[in-house]
Image (tube, rainbow, N blue to C red; front, side):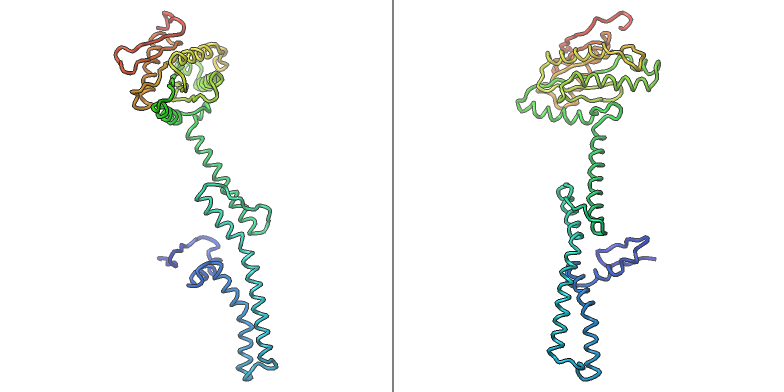
Length: 333
């Protein structure tokens, strides 16, 4: 069976719908335009109707109001109207919490600021305002949590690839406006598959968290650092040239290699590093990451636990390579 509803209205459905019958009827009134005006009109008529009906009935029965002069009738009606006026003033004040709640929701939708609704009342209207404020605060908290989740690596708690890409694109825009250069450092743990196979994935996860922590402690607080995925991390060093970038990478390499890993029974883990610097010809941040990855592959091929830098983005065949770190051992090559 198809349900028909007044224009602009939808059925709430479910338990309690019948309690809206008066509200539904009230909304069908063509005048006044506002809900408050319609409510006041209905309350006024409800207050006046009994007295008016009594006076009319008495007049029809006796040809006039028994025992009452026209002046007295006017005074009675005037007093009744004054009472109705006072009732409407009180009703308007009693409906202020509803109007404040509507205004607060509209303001929140426009500005996304939590409304300052009063929270010290325990009646129905007070609970309405308190619950609206509480619901909006929960919504903002959930939105902030979602934003953090979208920008944070769940395992290590540092930024994720998406966040790093956004920061990198912004730094490219800044650098193209004659800003300072910046360096990108890609870090990849050595023999990580061997760690997982030997010690288990839980130990591998613990190593990733430990490495993320040691790198963070060796960077400035404003230096972007993210997990790209798997065992690969990346650092963006703003206002840094290639020489200083190599120095940062070498410091990080030594910090990782010198730290005993509790998850590995005190054994050490190492990492390889690829370093590059922004160049005017870089079309986007992905191109810079690719160049840093090429330097990283060179570090892997040269024995791991070392730093390599790819400094010439315009010469893909013969890149200028800088190397730091220990010489490779025969069994690592």
